[in-house]
Length: 237
Image (cartoon, rainbow, N blue to C red; front, top):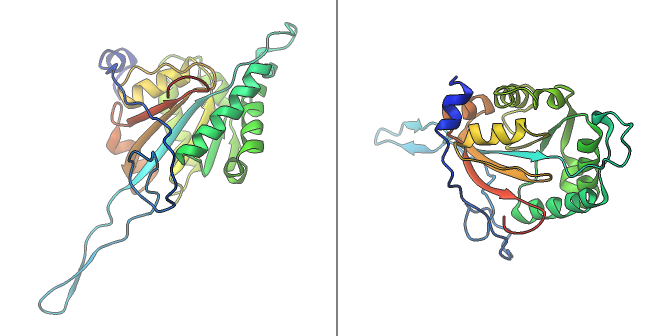
């Protein structure tokens, strides 16, 4: 794996953004102006030969989507609290509502959620679950190391990869990892090869292809994940 300095020197500052046009179709389609993704696992193609034999082609790699969400804004009102125990501010709670709704509009609803166990990430997730049923239905794991790894230079991307591969299954196509800066911003930049800024309650939407999560990470490597956009509570996305 390339070191952090090399990875960051190769970052591309230009990355695509997503809009929120109205979508009425419920059919499965590829990413288009509607902003939705095909989540159907491709099946093997069977071809008949002249001799009546059948040749089965390899199943095409499927889209795997990774959401890196930084927790919503926290409160500093009580200075006696440990950093780990700081709750969300009023503005942070409002932002969590907005981002959950935007992710729902885009169809980026995770089937698996891996989160730091810090109070502000737990509260961010709880609000999102109250707003959008899909977040409530997702499998959730709170991972204490997500809190500490974010402060360690160059280690977050690899740590997230190992966590996703450990807790996910091949049939899970969308995973959301919730955590902190600077690690989350650094991981999004290293995986996508773009210069990613993640303010509070910003979510980087990353996509790669593979028949398993291990294969997707292996094939994409550092810089190979496509940055489909950044979801923000306010302003452009």
